[in-house]
Length: 42
Image (cartoon, rainbow, N blue to C red; front, side, top):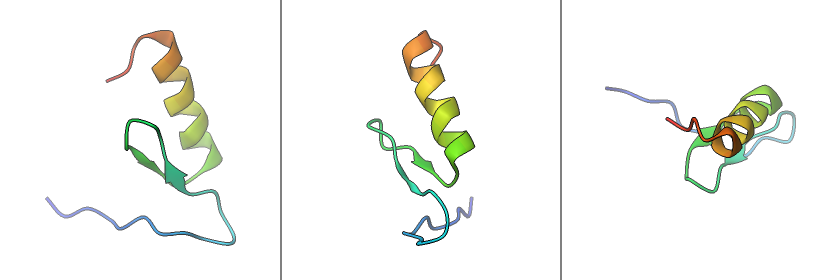
């Protein structure tokens, strides 16, 4: 399966969670944060 490359961007929020899951927006970052601390991490 082909996946997109996540790179640094001066315009939008990009990064990697402590579990090494890349995110590309603040909404995704918030979702991963909530999933991680609610105990429902995939």
